[in-house]
Length: 119
Length: 111
Image 1 (cartoon, each protein chain N blue to C red):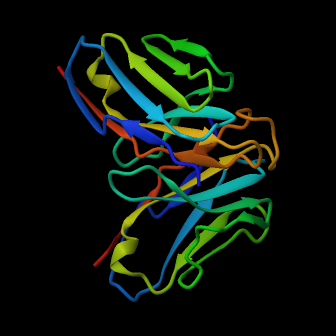
Image 2: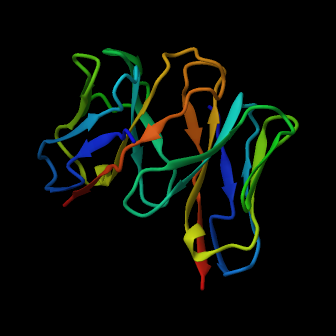
Image 3: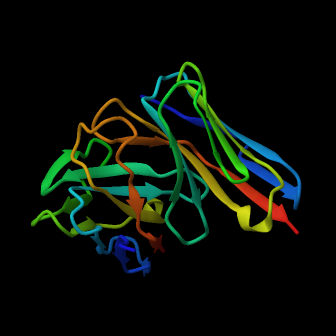
C-alpha cells in the first residue's frame, strides 16, 4: 500500500540553526499539505500545495519558514532560524484531487511525521 | 475562523466499557472526518460523514454528524486496549480540501 514518506523522523537542533524536512507524497497525488502539531493539540495547516503552486500559506510564519515543491512531487519545509517554540511534530499529508473537489470526497493521507526538538 | 472543540480532552476507561467523544463548532462544515493517531505516528482516517444527521458504523465504532452539520460524536462500544490513542475530528470546508482540526481527545483503555 502506498504511503507518504517523511524524513528525518526525529531532529534535534539548537535555536538559531537551520532545519529542513522532506516529504514524498503518494504517487499521483496532486495536493500536498504541511501541518504542525504541538504536543497535546490537533494539527494546524502551515501550507498547501496544488502541484507545484502554493494554494494556502496564510498560517506559515514567512519570516522564518519556507516551503517548496519544485516539480510538483516531493516537498521540503525549512525553518531558519529555529526557535524554541518551533518544537513540534511536523506532518505531511497528500490527497489525490485538486482543490475544489466535492466535499468529503478527497481523503488526506498522512506521513509518520518529523518530531523536532529545539534546544 | 472556524473552530472545532473536542471534549473531553482525556478519557481513561477500563476494557469493556463504552465511551463517547464529542466535537462541536459554531460553524457549519461540509464534511466531518474522524482520525486516530498513535504516539509518534501520523493520523489515520477512520470515517468521513457529509450529510446532516448521518450515522456510520464501523464494527464497534459509531459516528454521527449533527443535523445542522456543526457537531459530531464518536461512540465506542466495549472498548479494547487497541482503541487507545488520540482521536481527532476535522471539519472540511466547502472547497479547497482544507481541514480544520479539533484539539483531540486522548483515550486510554486499560486492560
